[in-house]
Length: 192
Image (cartoon, rainbow, N blue to C red):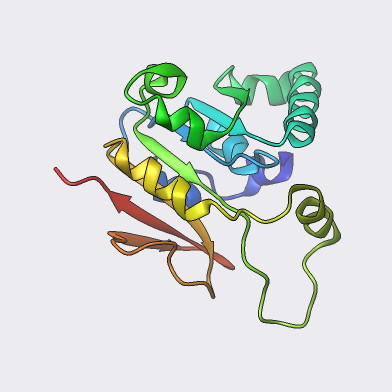
């Protein structure tokens, strides 16, 4: 992650463009509803976004919490994060049911971000070993459509969903997409 932070393209990265960081006077406040290993949350936080990362799998939450504790011991990484990344253990769908009250609403997000478990690739090559182990531990995200529906129901201005480039959008109504090398970020805008 340190290499990506130093040489990853900064605000020009697809995830940064998708949440609206590029050209923003004030970095958007982002809730990552499916943080997983918190890679995208980490990148956004080091680029200046206040990020609340939600992870429902306790084992993954504990791994990320340990990683953040280790990162806080490194002065360069701690300075880059600037206390902008908060980690919370919980089920995002249940937390969204409390909207417009509760933890998520109190954070006052500009963007809700989802990176659900990607469907298997049509290629014969296996994903990286790390992701195969992650999938084995976490399983499938069978409720990802429900999570997107709950996120869009909040009325938050922008919901961003990370998808593999080969996969169809998670739902109809994509306002725009930001392509990456192997993924794309589908942007859903709230009706104004």
